[in-house]
Image (cartoon, rainbow, N blue to C red; front, side):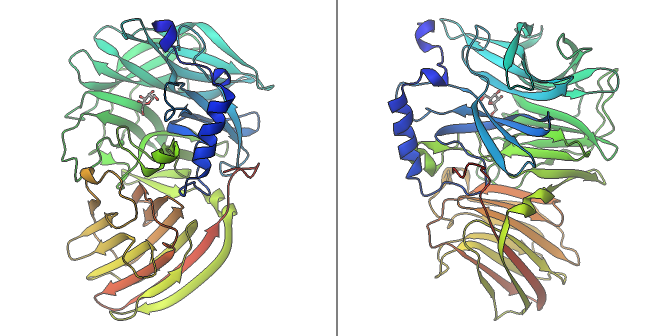
Length: 499
Ligand code: FRU
């Protein structure tokens, strides 16, 4: 039974099955222009984001045949890039190959060590009774692209006091050793994050649990990441099982703790109030890296487990976010679109307007575009920005900047094909409006990423509009506002031209 259910390698999947899956997804009206997405099947977490041998490396969790009856595969799909924007897809990298990752090489990270890129990840296994044993594994990639696994596993099973939900190591190079954070579940079924240490990045031992004030803890913390930025320690993690109202907030979310640098001796992490990383509908399992010029970059999965998306009917699902640069200021994490994304800019248009109550700004934006909207006065009442609207205005995603209620509201109830409406169609974020508001939008065929005031507010969401939804409409209710709108068409990101 175990042998039968063991996951396949991609090359073992019959070619007609692969071809059929590709033919179906090619018919999808929602294939993206400049976001990474799988040719077929399901994408989830970004993995192995790193710089090695003159290139950026990025992988994602990939289940190419998720929507094909009776076939199963899970592995890492690998891409490389010179600039984090234009990518060459290389194909599957880590596959279910050994007894230690027979049921999927799960999430993990990468770091360049000597002349190798070292991957540190979780091997998922199941026995005949479907009992799980997690292994923490190392694989090494050389400059010729040859991959070898380092066996035996760095860690087998889970430490005492924790369950088999023990996964997603994120490695970094500290001053005196290599460190990694890893997601865990206590035996009391509460989420946690552990710190591991290694002198050589090969032999690891567990230091213990990171002490935070984050409560309630939920039942599991997935995909933790720790780094220091602008003198602050930052812990990102995905707690599962928090009991908030699922129509107002996402089922699973990414949390940010900013504080003093983590004490590597007693594992105390003194932090400020937790923040949500994202205020949209679809963001999870982020991963960061430091570029050679010292910037901290984040990429996330624009999707959430257990949610369903209309692209599934076409046999594909899941995209990665655009890369963002992180900064910490006054204890707040800011995300800004990576400056290299400007190389995607094509046709340009610009409008200046004095926005009063009668006269909206209307622009033909297309579907795959970047827009920068600067409202230079203090909003005293309400400004609405309809994104991806159809000509009659009956379909759109509505962003409302509401100074009276002190809120930013994102409403996708009329955005197009419905997406998980039972989980609510509005996301409301408390906000105090100051003298100027800048709204920076990245729209692709089926997604919207919105950055307000230098990325203090960020929202990432999938939308599934019809083809005629190509308009941008800004309306003002309140004192007249000076507005500047700039809009660029954005080009594709794959070197081989494939979508
Ligand atoms: C998060 C996650 C990780 C796991 C991976 C498996 O989305 O559940 O914890 O490693 O997905 O694909």
